[in-house]
Length: 250
Ligand code: PEP
Image (cartoon, rainbow, N blue to C red):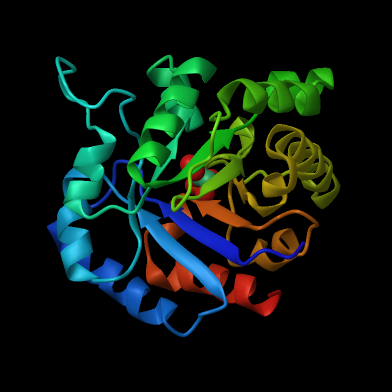
């Protein structure tokens, strides 16, 4: 099944009021690529201003708490993201799994909370270099996704999975297209096992050092339904050629 590609930017801890112009430029330029879904996941504090700066353009969070409200200092709930104007959120990014010690169970709960509120979700999985070198990448990542998958992937909201090898994030290193194909094929099988026919419609994004120079080759790999882009999403000049590459293969 051919799915509409999704190219989502992850701004991580980058972005001030002065960067709203860049968001506006990306949102405006994205209008020329109706065959691709484009989104930007920005710091929580910027969501409301980004949504106002680019009305109708999908703005997302980078994390969400699994509970609705309460004594969770510094955390942001799904309802708060929605209230600020977000339509999606990332969950389970490896930087959070590592630095905030988030477990697969936490990620599953966060995905369920977000989907339950009507937010679309990009759920990240990926292996370390140690695991890849041991030859266990596919089994490890499939197991990680199995444990992180929400029970129900929502009705209006949508689930996407992002395969992001930890060793490829921000390093300039990228797996071979064969390695990406092998992983995405295994993840697709798991999604079909978990959700039956609906598993065919879950987009599987690749993430990790996607750039204008390698995007098209990656998008041509079977079961690559888009990309989660970190560093190259901060400037329209880098991000839009990636969106254009997704459009070129659509
Ligand atoms: C990411 O952190 O989600 C990511 C893919 O980063 P980069 O594109 O910078 O490797």
